[in-house]
Image (cartoon, rainbow, N blue to C red; front, side, top):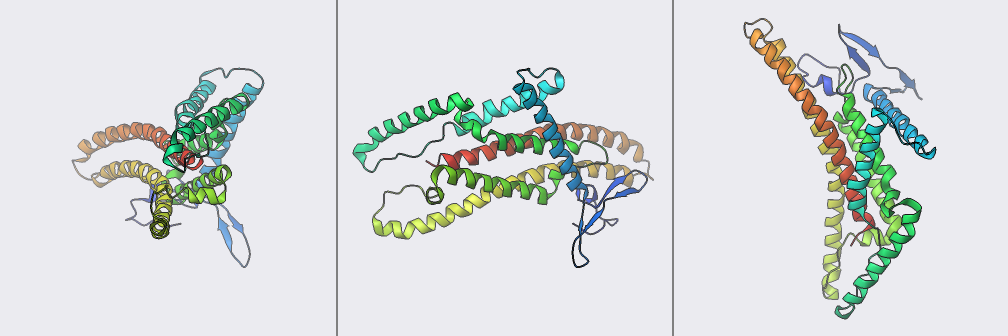
Amino acid sequence: MAAPPGESDIFHHVRDWPYFHLPGEIHIWLPKIPLWDHRSFQITKYMVLQLVAGMLVLFIFRGLARRTAEGRPPEGPWWNFWETLALYIRDNVVRPTIGVPHHDHGGHGNGEHEHDAHAVHEHRETAHAETSAASGHPADRYLPYVWTCFFYVLICNLLGAFPWLGSPTAEINVTGALAVVTVLTVMFYGMQRSGVAGFWASMVPKMELAPFMKVIMWPLIFIIEIIGFVIKHGVLAIRLFANMMGGHTVIAVLLLFIAQTSTSWLYYIVLPSSIFGQIFVGTLELLVAFIQAYIFAFLATLFIGMAVNPH
C-alpha cells in the first residue's frame, strides 16, 4: 500500500487505503488483524469491496440456480438482466471459442493426413455426442470459471460508479491476482486434458526438421513460447488495470480543474464544462466496465481453448 496521500498526490482516489474517505474529511478506518511478533494484517478498502463483489456474485447466481433447479424461469428485469448476460457469455464466447476439446491425432507421414483428419473428425463427433447429453455442450464444463471472471470483474468495475467507493480493478495487485488465478486455471485444464508432459510439449509446434536441428531448435522455441505464455496472461492484468485507472484519473483531473480555478473568473466557465465532462466520462466508464469484463472473460476463454485444443 502506498504512503499516506500528500497535497501533490493526484492519484489518491484510485489508490487502496485502510479507510473509506467520506465528504468533510471523514475517514472510516478499517481494522487491523493482529498476527504474530507484533505484526498485523491491515484490512483495506479494496479488500472490502472485493468481498462485496464476491457476495453479490454469489447472491445473484444462487438465485438463478435455485430458480432453474425448481423449473421456474427467471422473471422480472433484475433476474432477466443477469440471465441475459450469462447466456450471452455461454453462447457467444465460451461455446464457439473453445468448441469441442479434443486430442490431436496428427499424422506421422504424408500418406496418413487424410486418414488422421477423418479420425479427428470422428473423435470430435463422438466426444460431442457423449457430452451433449450430460452438459449440453462439451465446453460448458469451463463455464463456471469464465462466468465467475466476467461477473466478478464486472461488479468490481461498476462499484467505482458509486460515490465514495471505488473500483478494485483499478489496483494492479487485484488484476495481477486475477491473472495469476487465470494462468493456474489454464494450466490445470490443459494438464487435465493432455497430461502434464503433453501440455508442456504442446507449447512447441510440430516441426519437420532433421533430428540434429530439432535438438537445437526445440529448446529455443520452448523458452520463447513459455515467455509468450507468461506475457499473454500478464496482459490480462495490465489491460484491465490501465483502463479502469485511466477512467478514474480523467474524472479526477476534471475535478481538479474546478479546484484550481475556484478563485478566478475562469471558474464560471470551467465549472459547467467540467461537470459536463464528468457526466460524459462517467457514462463512458459504465460502457468500459462492461467491455473490460467481456474482454477479460473472452481472453480467459481463448487461453483455456488453446490449452485444451493445443493443435
